[in-house]
Image (cartoon, rainbow, N blue to C red):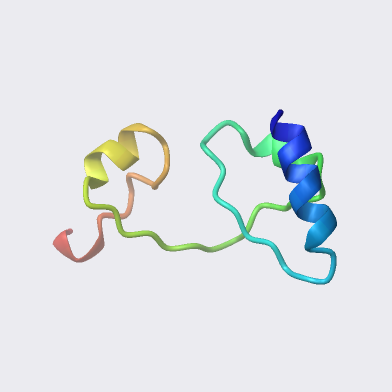
Length: 66
């Protein structure tokens, strides 16, 4: 089902840059559709500890509280 959803969206967005968030470990699925990893991104989470546990942010960066 995921493949069908992504294909349908990309068919309609042919002349646009498309950015998405992938859950950690799911990047390979999107690489099949020619998505590439970005070199930089920033995020601010309400529960940064949970985001780190889930692999969404690098534990080496804690923002202004560090």
